Image (tube, rainbow, N blue to C red; front, top):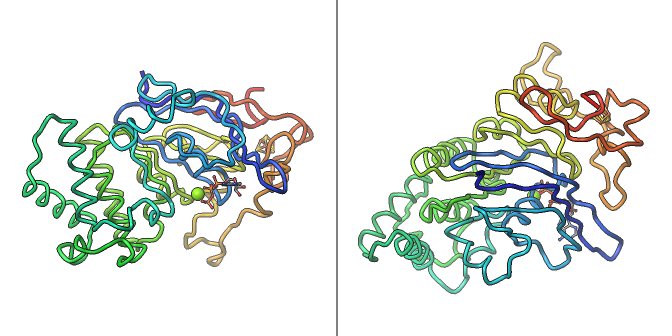
Length: 324
Ligand code: ATP
Ligand code: SF4
Ligand code: MG
């Protein structure tokens, strides 16, 4: 059985101007020890997906329909109390804006020690502060934190955004949850540190069988971290498959456009192929395939009928060009 099974998930938000249809009919699963990278432009619903899985949608979420089964538990229908128990050791999430995840009144050291206490308890080990501090210092060096011995004596407001991001990644590494959700965790960090952290996450997956749901707007980053890749566009799942299938044989016109927009020294005198048009307003999303206003392959039916998610070879594609 998969660790996480998400079926037909739709999420909408209430706003004073109307309902935002942020996710529509998203289905996927993640096996134990497997990583899934979710890629899409800004506003495609990536954070909404992560928050729904962590049961952390904001109060103005109008509904979350479908089902989310984590480790055999039906998350959408669980009480808040039961969900709280899963958080941390079952599911750990690094937020896109990580500053709010730390408690402002405790030093970094105390917050990391607390995280480790939870894990030691789960593993049935007694808590030994010296051993815990050694482990914390090692992880902080792993995430390339400069002066970790000074940093752990600080309060969150005394750290930069990049430092907080590293602390949150370190906390996740220390807790070793079953599912590690990371929402753009490396976007504020420079490229070398990003690469280092992606490697650390892959080690964690290999060494502890941790599953990873990794969110990024960068398909190159997705290809480094994801065993599988899911492409989201305007809240619709457009394509889902193994990293190799998605990167080397993309079927969906949007995935193809994403791959074509990767900056590279091209023959066309360094010109970057861009995706024309802009992301639609999800208060009034395009009918049919939400990508149709920007799709070079669009036909009549595309604006009228939502394509089904169909299996083509080993991948799932939502597009009228395939198997309808
Ligand atoms: P980004 O790459 O910019 O982080 P994203 O892919 O994470 O974008 P989401 O944050 O999930 O996208 O947003 C999806 C849609 O839902 C957007 O149209 C966004 O404006 C809207 N949205 C997100 N959060 C809320 C909220 N709390 N209330 C109302 N609308 C929201
Ligand atoms: Fe393009 Fe139509 Fe496929 Fe949507 S369904 S991606 S508009 S061809
Ligand atoms: Mg986001």
